[in-house]
Length: 303
Ligand code: DON
Image (cartoon, rainbow, N blue to C red; front, side, top):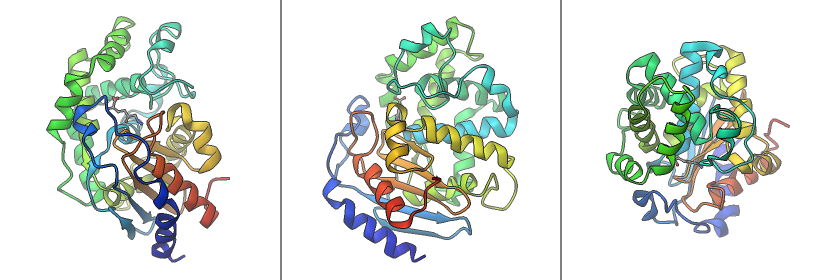
């Protein structure tokens, strides 16, 4: 397949969508971003990478980091995590508090904020430095040593982090955090602040398309664990829009309020698209449209 031609066709098809939606206003450092950006990259399982538009421009990965956090915990700790977090779609916004009390401090899944805080807590216990462990992993898998935290984004989110703090304290009250709340929040905000391009993220997520094999050919995860992460991405990766995303795109995907979406065609390639205008559920308007166009053009979906 001529990937460059396909990506250019996708970019042309979604051009009218670029600039629609809104930036993530609840994190002031993200609110000022120019809504006109759009990039898309495709990393083939053979390691080659192709892109269009702003595919080499770094943006804030935000919740896309949650997919990597889950992978790192499953790689180091097997299935133990699932006693502390579920794997059902929540049907509620990513930062919702409402289910936590009914469900005794056990978040529905690892991709809503509450679940990701539990994953960060576990990674912190396993490694002693959750966010640096993730940064090192992302540098290695993307092959880009420039990948970094964005301290301005991390502190902006921390300064406006009352809702995440509420989720963390509430779970701590149920004994579902092992580390101090502030430690968990600091590492969570730092991991969300990591700045990467579509190119970097498509490469870093390659293990999800390579059935658990890292970019150097070593085994990061058993194939069944890569399958499981992809399954949770499909059912929970875009929050209360996961049903619509599966319907339109038909691929496992993980979005972030920086406007990025990582999507996986198992056995073939990893895609990352970025455009900062978000819909009401926090997913990139042009990003979802681009993945929809990609799977429609190529017939590459999991269905
Ligand atoms: O915790 C937050 O609210 C952000 N750091 C991440 C949320 C996010 O990216 C949700 N994604 N669509």
